[in-house]
Length: 325
Image (cartoon, rainbow, N blue to C red; front, side, top):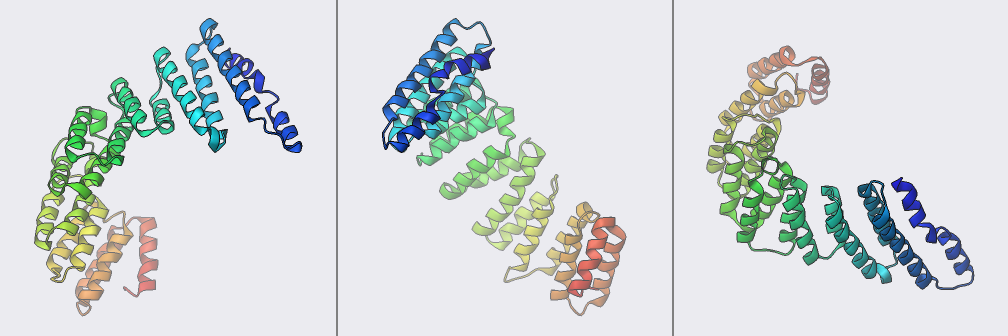
């Protein structure tokens, strides 16, 4: 089988540990000898692959594992040579078998930046729906401080593929880049993430991110408009509501009516499952409407009737600790 053939191929290095120990005792350098033995192993693999009748895919992957392992063990003075060898073996393997996306990412992590760009393009051509590969392709461009026009073009290519389009990984990468380089494009991306047909988890994550970004770049009036627009669309997110409430609470012109509305909207979705939501509501009332005992009592009573068992216990404990009853 392939594993047996792999072990046979690696036979020249079977006594490597013993060689190194003896060399250390005699203060000898056996680097060259080890390199010769490694070359013999690679030649053995090549011969096995030419004549093998077993699963060549498995044997190629064992060969790749060997090369990567030797690279990780190589001394810094030998890294460059091992990187070149790994690159050559990965390249040969890609011509003979179908490398997995994980193998392509491993290959990219080994080679230099320019070579990595070539490899990742080959990978995305082979796996156009793999979001991890597209994310790496975009990240490589970001690392070299590519112009936003190039990033827009690449994102547009990636966006054509449904699995990539619905990947939170891709959206986070491209929006993080846009936030630093292009305010207009950032807003367009946030709008795109909310009002085009995307995976709900992506829309949910981007909704909170959109609100936080708006608070950093826009006036409170504009933030309120964005909140109103986003809160009218499903899915709902507790962090989204809590973030908005904190934004309002930190505003110089605090609007208690809007804060109350946000709490009440959040309660519709999360009132049964979040003691923290009710506690935050009571904390707010205590801080800003401390004399309105009737309202506080009503909110407390509603929480007792709404919360499910475990959250109810936690709510009662926290209320006692914070003196919210």
